[in-house]
Image 1 (cartoon, rainbow, N blue to C red):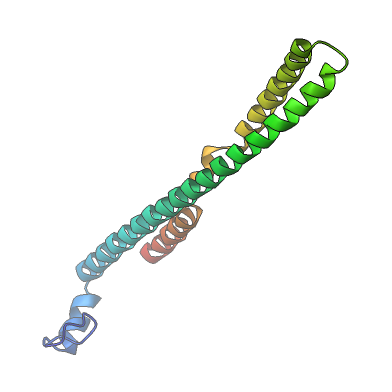
Image 2: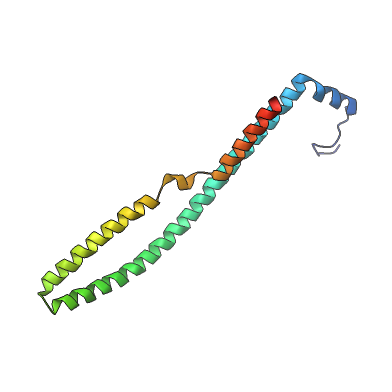
Length: 143
């Protein structure tokens, strides 16, 4: 006997036609199909979330490495500005001016970045669209 679920069974074609033509059989088939469909949609959503989390993790690691390198560069630029100002004023005052300016600019950058990080980035858009289409198809099939 074949293990293929689509292969004809030993019951014969007339039994299959009679069972699938009956209303309870059609409802049972619809319920099974919907159950399978939603199970697959859930699997797709899980896969999308895993992929988004993996991509975010890689992105955060790359940003951390870049930020570390950029920080060292910024420190040297700030030191050079501080020493340049020290030619016109006391060293402590030039260090204070550069430090306060760096804090203000850094705070503004953090606030601007917060606006770009939104929870909407983690919405499984393909799954939501697929579920919407499946729901419409199921409604049409019921009518």
